[in-house]
Image 1 (cartoon, rainbow, N blue to C red):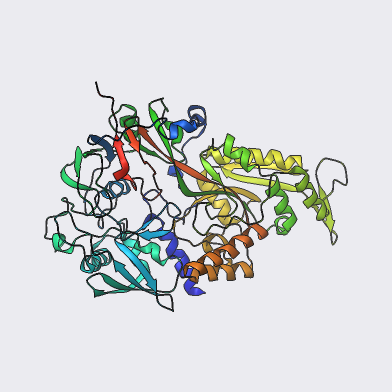
Image 2: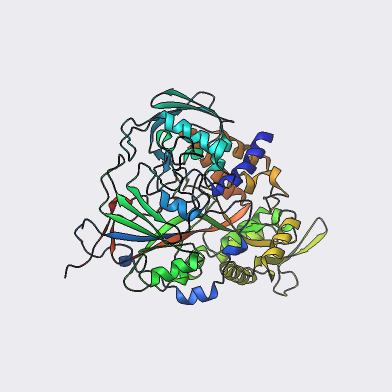
Length: 558
């Protein structure tokens, strides 16, 4: 169990590596820098009609053209040494990963075509495709994978995007030209996710420190490097790839920008074709008629947390009552403005091991009141506030809701929840605090309910939220349950696909039965494109250019 907890903490650190460029570390509830004012966004944003999410008519594929993107100034274009998220995003056009994630957050073949674990679950045999070629015409082999592991473990800075992937790998060795063996520190359901990393050519890069290839990338993706002008632009051109049909777009020009505001300005001025917006930023852009909107599911999870050190919330019927008056559908429509997915547990509905057959709490004031009556909550003095006496202990149904004032979404959730609680007989106060005070109160246990959120890793592990050993650390609710701990352990150690599904099925059922949290929603991100961009545009959270070879640029012929 000590190993489990140590690896839980290590997993939280992995969030900003091995998966996606815009996830924050799960050791922070929500960084204040993300919590921009939402009121202005609420008035600016409009839900996109369904017809704007895809072309309204059959448009013939056009070959050629130049796609304009943006990234920050690069200090290196080596994907294993790079520390910048926006640069990593662009380098995914040049380099393919050892293993990729599909739309269901499931590890899928890429450079590796198949894999298998030993009986113990900690040793992986990885088979590589034998038909993958680098852009210089040489063949990709196991030597390149071993070399890439060496670079990450021995040369990459601690802040490199993929550095923490190596935290899970204990040993690795070449078995043949197209197979390797990887030993992990322990059997863990998330071990494969540590292999979501690009691979670089051993022959091309050679001695990293002396080869001079740091700013001249050479990969195996759909586009290859042409040139880079610091603080100005990088140019890519399409190439033959081992991973699918050649791209329709001929060239990509990547403008060098200083920050997100510059990205926004460039897009609105027509200088770039693509703008990726987080859930906090969606309202910043004016959605003109010639702008297309593509939704991107994310692991940003919003919830209501209970303080289990308070006797009130140790009563399961109270928790069920609060779940029954949490208006998820209304919140999704009116607060998230449709940019999200209803949550029942901390596991996203698109996840490959998501379990739909769990206990659900549909909005029902009558049901909430029934739950409270079952625990003897009554308005004995007819003052509109419920009370009860248990073993000579008199209690009043009095609740304070903590939220951080910088986050408009959370503020609105707190207001709406407070209104619903008053409707079933609670005395409610709202406790809005600046983010630093908010986190201090969470850590001190100075709250009743709180509206919170986590940017969860794509790697499956929920111990930091639910395990008894995390009380006082990241388990702010102070929830403790031995059966839940055991289920978390089983899910953590599962390796075979069927075992993982079963373990997470049981865990999700337990979560909805116990209600340590009231899950609200997962937020969506958005990819905006100019009206020139067409084709199969399907951004994924960890790679918005996953289907780039199926995009094309269409412009009316004069």
